[in-house]
Image (cartoon, rainbow, N blue to C red; front, side, top):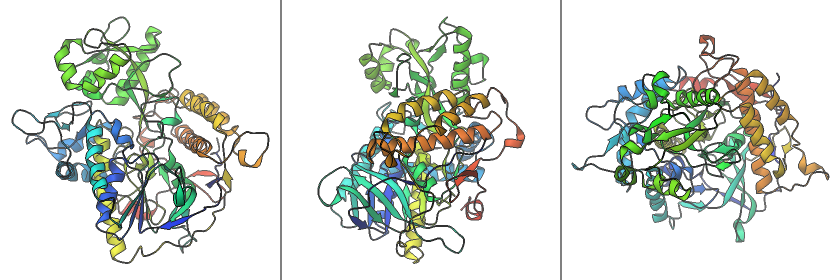
Length: 570
């Protein structure tokens, strides 16, 4: 099956305004906020762009916690071992070592920046355990509101310097494309800034261009590519698609983590779904099928604490065996007082749905939760496009491999955003990244998909590249995605205009097309990628699937650039 052909730009009006900066950071989750804060005092001018309000990054939704070897009895090496085990043989050991050795200091810096983590009677951090971890190393805030607390603290830091001329925050701004300059001697087009659409008033309204020699993508995940996800509505894969169109290499797209315990709300449920945190099973909750049978001890030595892909696939098998559409998460034995104190947000959310989990088991089923793949970077956040960085969930650092270990995502965003910002600052100081190159139009054409097609794309991806896949399902999905009209801006028989809903749908379509192709290429099962026609891991596939667009927009397998391979441990 040939790869899809994708346009190299979004169809959009010409920019009506222009601004400039030394560095542009796109996204306001833990990675984007950290990068902006680190850059603010190190480069003359930073532009921080967010799709919604400043406080609307995906980090707000993180319930579980942040993992780091902070306990005296824990070690970075033990954290490394657990992370590599979850990664299914594809994690980059050097990237993981960076994560686990620098992680504790970065978490302490979060505390210094005002994050209030839960503490025990002795005043030390109250560390807990989650799936795949063999030690208590998960720090929480507000019981199950860790992401919200981290976001609050970092947003407060940004708000405190918002009047500083060295930083500008641009809210309600959707980045459309990464601008690139003329090809260098190596044939690569350097980043030159971004085009973006601002929903506001005044000089920053409508489509504009922000020019800079550095763009740091921190745009989060791809949840809305699927019909059902725990991700917020804005998680449409903007960063991956923009980087791909700009010429960047992407990798591990096929590895999608489906959270095993998402509240089951019926077959018609779509959009963002409430998840029941991994921490609930970490505290001792049990998984039962609809007959009341506890099935996880027969599936894995860690039972309910097995890595997420193991639990999700076990649930899928149990659903098939019982002809059911959900299983049950039973936490009643933990006690009503404990559940209300430890998990206040989950308790309130379930009560809103008419479920009192202190009295009854909770119906759950897997749903898309996290994307282990993304824009391939080295350990400094550099992508294959000069001047373009990626950090957080949008990036593929090699840490997660085939499957993310619980609560490593916040840590990855924190650690690698810090490293990327320091690298950018040093290159700016050295004069390597002095000014933005003049933007040039890329070959490959532009695309626009009607907003009406989004549900079709989401259904296709969910059915063809969900928790269980096959050649047949993926080829059917590829054919369906290939039939979607991408020329809505050039025809009168499709109702569509260049606007936010169409741009997001175009992005969703491009990410779905690339993901399906990557999943078709990997002829084995590993981590967050399971195929019924190749149900076991194959040593021949213990490598990354990396993809890039050629000048004509054809998606092809792409070898990693020497810079990324050689600098993985820096």
